Image 1 (cartoon, rainbow, N blue to C red):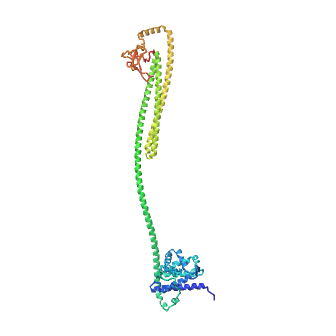
Image 2 (tube, rainbow, N blue to C red):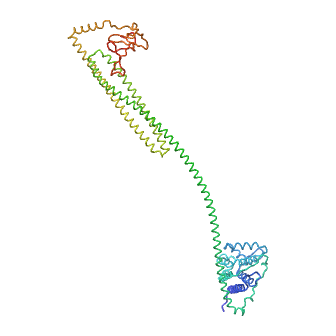
Length: 531
């Protein structure tokens, strides 16, 4: 016969004993009432059998005093693999009456049975065989298939309700001896098969109810966790809502403040624009008045030019008749040149005024651009002001063109005056030649005319300055306010108040005074040496 492996035989025997012990415990518990205490013999035998199963193949650990062989080491490892086992491990460590590791292991088994989680704890342990190899030999029951079978049988113990008092019980000194008499067959067991079938059905129902209760407990625990998380999230959301409300209130206050500031800025800007508009209108009105004055001056100049052109023919006729008025014409030409210079000075002043108006317009345009950058909402008003400025610049260009035309007309008038001077000079020379020619032909007639003229001028001799002390008409004494005026034709002396007869000349801006007797030009006498 082949020799069997003794460790395999030991494993088989321990498995059979575990089957008998678990079966007997369940059957006796169902018949006894299924609520067991620590004095119940089948329960004590169950713990003894489990202790032998856990001790099988256990490695011997060397301690400081002796060799130690205990099952507390692998059982203590369960709390690292199954977090729910931490509670019973801590309870076992806190028990005051336990002194040995074996007593702690026995207390741990009893607490695991009361929790109905012994099968779950040991299943987590046998799965981690690499960890169990530190405590068991390779041929141990917990390392082989028999250990998994025993763990499966332990699931049936969930139908048992155990009420065990671990505190105060002497677990260190108990002797674990298996009582085989409890597992021998009895004739009464054969006759109670029907009762066992009913009990099995009841146990199945109880197992179903307990499994359902376990699932409900897990569902309730998950719901509790979810409720806690929802409460936390709800409190967090409430806090965030309060913060959001505070932020909304702050934002509303800031919005109200910004709106009030915007209203103030808008009012200030409107006031500034109104003031600017009034200033622009005043400048425009001033410019219009100045432009009207310029137009009047231009019209007056044109009128004077027309009058000069009209009177030029009269002067030419008069020159043909009166050759002796050559000196007066030259004097009038000098006055005309002086007037032209004055007009040029006036034009220069007008140009300066135009430059100032341009500078003012440029400054106003820059102000309008600044206001446009500050208030973009007033683009339409600024565009209108720009249009008005463009109109003003166009008007200024027109005025400049008019000024240029006036300058051209003045230049033309000067050229015409020069031509007129030349013509007068040529005519006077021709007249002198003609006179000299006629003098040769008519010496006698000229002498007679001279004699007649001398007869007419007898008694009309120019008085000296010292002798002429009173006006001939008003007979008032001459002074600084009453200046002397001589008639170069008849020799009479008048004051400036009496010699009020005036004759307008095209070459002079002011009318020329004439004598009351002969209507010749009066000359203001400045000194006694004047001829």
